[in-house]
Image 1 (cartoon, rainbow over the protein chains, first blue to last red):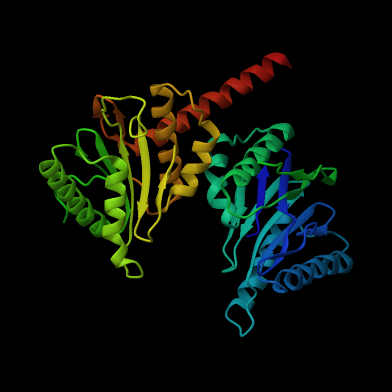
Image 2 (image 1 turned 90 degrees about the vertical axis):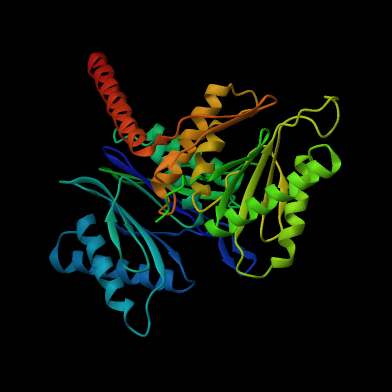
Amino acid sequence: MEYLIGIQGPDFVLVAADNVAANSILQMKHDADKMFKLSEKILLLCVGEAGDTAQFAEYIQKNVQLYKMRNGYELSPSAAANFTRKNLADYLRSRTPYHVNLLLAGYDDTDGPGLYYMDYLSALAKAPFAAHGYGAFLTLSILDQHYRPDLTRDEAVDLLKKCIEELRKRFILNLPSFTVRVIDKEGIHDLETLTSGPK
Amino acid sequence: MITFPLTIITPIHSHLVITSSGSGADCMLWERILAREIRLYHLRHRRRLSICGTAKLLSLMLHPFKGTELCVALTLQDVPVTAHSASPNSGPKLIYVCSDGARLQGDVFSVGSGSPYAYGVLDGGLRWGLSKEEAVSLAREAVFRATHRDAYSGNSVDLFHITAQGWSQRTREDLREEYYRDMKRREKIAEERRRVTTSDG
């Protein structure tokens, strides 16, 4: 029901998430923000079981902040991703596993932009583009077809719009709007909320 | 070991072609049963059963098995030759029938485990006025992208083109070559972009 997407460019990462917080057949909230700011240049997008998402994401968020306070410098996106994965893996075989699917997007001042795909079984993969949710089935082929490693920001947004248009057309559930953010060397920037217009 | 040529697309008669997905064994059986029934109809009534009739017949034959493990999802495509071109039975038709009981007529369908991936590509390029070459290229691209992402699809792509004169089949293409062709195309585009930006800068 929920949808996350990330597209990495040469010097930025574009991420978007839908805005619906659902309970059974109802939209309880249509302006939900599924992105958690781990640091000035790292975003964690988190979907999955109700409760697990916020609990796990906030736990990671606070721990990343704690690292910065203790050591004086921030965790890199790669380190944060591996830290997250380790926590997810440790809980996986406990009595209380977290059922969450994540995208971690960040900009490292030495390594550049990075997008990390993580699923509820704690699989971690660095990828040029990734998506979560049923919407991923419909949009991964579009990303395969049109993605280039040297995309400009505008081209990445156009590619994102193509994906959202496909969801509007073929996905059985209505996802009316999407929060879009870009991370680059200047930090995290909010872009215009994308809406899927009327059919 | 399977030695006969395995196809997902099966021509039934000169103007009727069926694609199958779901359980392979179930589809093979039900295609044979359907072919037998429509041949019997042809012999008894001295005319071919229309595609709508064929689809309905199949749907009614599958109905007793609803709720069982039977898993069949077929598309029937036909371009009937009729005397009166204005009749509702004329013109090309595409009908989707599945073991759940659905029977849907439409302009475009993608069926099977790889279908969501194919829809992504199809919807981007589909228009009513496509030429034959454009349609072939779009269909091939959709199948290629779906087989790339879906674990249960792959190997090669078959293409059938059906007109009022009957069906014709393109040579089966190995998708491995399509993958390498796509990689080369991307490299060329990347080179072009690099050349353009360096010449501009």
